[in-house]
Amino acid sequence: MTNNVEVVTIRVNGKEYAAWPEVSVSAKLKGVREFTMQTTERPSEWSFLPGTPVEILANDDVVLTGFFNRYNPSIQPEHHPITCYGRGKAQDIYDSHADTKTGRHVGKKPSEILKAENYTQANVITEVAEEAKPHFQVRQGETLWNMAKRAVNDQGLVMTETAKGDLSIMKARSRRHAGSIQEGRNLIDGNSDITDDQRHSETKVKGQNRDGTDDETALRIEKTATDSSVKRARKKVIVNQDNTTPASAQKRADKNVEWAQGMSVKATLVVQGWRDDGGRIWEPGDLIYVSSLSLKLDGDMTIESAEMKQNAEGESISTLQVVDPKAYGGKGGKSGSDPAYTAT
Picture 1: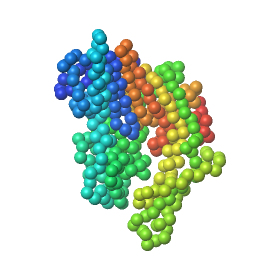
Picture 2: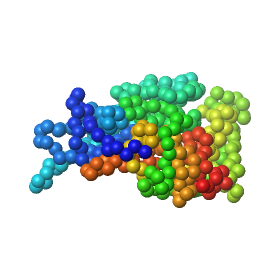
Picture 3: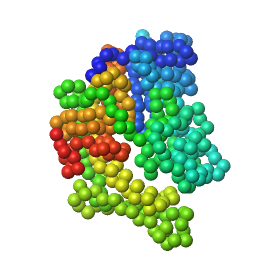
Picture 4: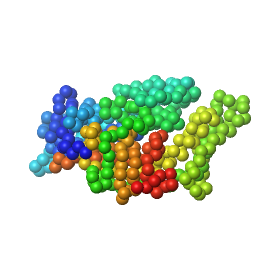
């Protein structure tokens, strides 16, 4: 594991500023990036007011591109401390509402729908093959983020923000981080959460096909998926609000079972530094091998979020939220006490 202290700088209007006593950068698999910085202001020199564009770098690697949102200066007898908070450029997609005349999209992919409705400065990119949606209707009053979330959910896709501030439509990657996180080696602190409260023996999806209302079967589409690891009778019924076909209903039922299996194994891991064994900054959506007898984890886990902090003493710490890869359509790790997994 790379334990070097990160040299954190911010780039504003072409100038770089360093010497930040405390800094925190958070990257999420399903959300926008955030940062918080604290320092003692040099009066009239550092004035990063809300709306100011910013890049944050760690040892020359860009970790966030966005804007300042809050600027909190204060006065103390011997200091003039400030706290700055901001988010990535995709915050405008997250916060802004759709403003459309008809909002009707026919035969478009989720990224095409979002690009057509997006009027912000944030770019929309895609890393995976998408399926065209026969019909999609934008709802009045919903944000661009929630609109896009509805469009990608039934395809097992997620939306995340890149270090460059782009909104990326993706699947949790099969790309993995170098090395591993191991108890007794580089795992400082942690806890796991192994549950079965979201698991069901049978998951049924019901819906209607708007293109086939003359056929009675199109009005009563039902598809079922089972989880053989759940031994008790526990049923879940999902009523699909969007246009439904037998194939899409079966796909959603199958993915819901996989999602529930994956979400039954989570963990919070605290590690030294901001990088993996190969020197790459932690990236949400990537895999990392985790081995901990105490936490009953032994296998690949998907990083859902990474909060990277550096304190006034120069200590660099990362807190990783990880989950079994099946939650995002990947192959399950060997974790927990469930019969679907093998404990260490």
